[in-house]
Length: 161
Image (tube, rainbow, N blue to C red):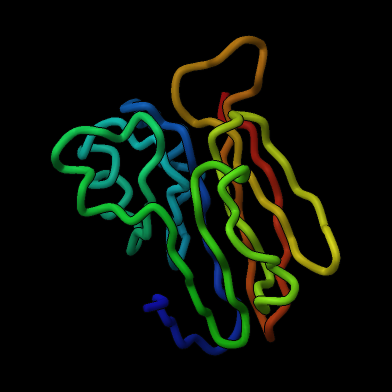
């Protein structure tokens, strides 16, 4: 069952992934003002979600490192409907189990690669916020913002540190 949110006007979604148990204060500051926060997996510790919930309601999916007992409550995939916009959230894009354009999704939100990505494929926005957790290799530490209004989607990647 999809999560449905009714909202008039512009709706701001903070998008974060691959925190691996580290909730950076800088990431929390960047997510302030969000109407909703989506965590695309590899949460790591329950305190991460508690911190995010102090900002806005949170929708989170389970990532490949989320194996502790508390993570059983996290779904592997989630569908979020905001007005006319449908978003599909999963951790690893390689596990996408549908044709998003045919299924009517406006965006696919994923994590796992730690590489930030904003790309349009066949009219569908693919968004990976990158990793907000421990720095990996030389990849930036990032989060994303997704604006939704009148069924339109606009995303931006923001470097945390």
